[in-house]
Image (cartoon, rainbow, N blue to C red):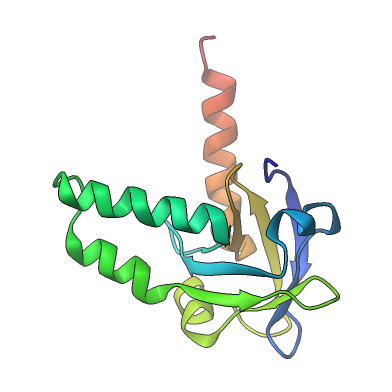
Length: 139
């Protein structure tokens, strides 16, 4: 299943976030949260996270990424349960990294292989730059 779309969400007072209903079966009962690029939080299925972890280990072995980066990604990752309402809890370390606060509007953005949680302020310029790149594409 490809994880796509832009979904307006809100972190509740317990720092929970509801996943879009149509994508919940992809994740099952658990998923991983980890630091993402450009100060977002990645939401990755357990199967995909294991695949990505193996790719990162191989990239370190080839000298393509540093062990420090590998360590930081692994240290930031947390396995979370998805409750019966399809919600996950975003822990404090990840909220701090991405600038997320309780009862805040957030953007849940698909990236085909994962969702990313963004503050609207961080997401807007990245979305605009990507849209410009599409418009300028020569294909």
